[in-house]
Length: 90
Image (cartoon, rainbow, N blue to C red; front, side):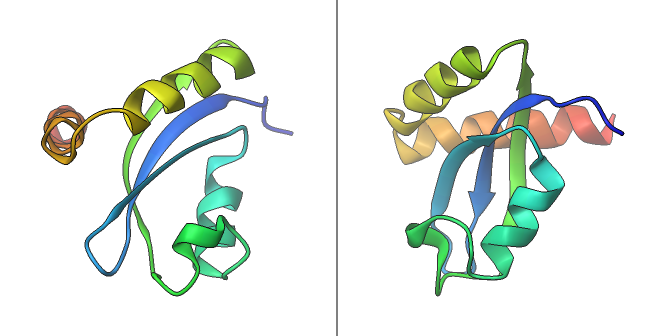
């Protein structure tokens, strides 16, 4: 069995909006969002696509980072996503 990881993530919804959350089972969580079982915000905005993720040592760190990202402007979030996507390609 896979070791649980604490991950902060950003989803891009089909309407172009962004949703930020945290989980310890990323694949399952994204599937839940796409099946309408995720957050209320993402219901009706699917399909969603994983745009960004970062791993943390503890649940508390992941939740704190989620709160920080939620306070960012859309432009700041897009920069974060762009840097992540660029690094992922390299």
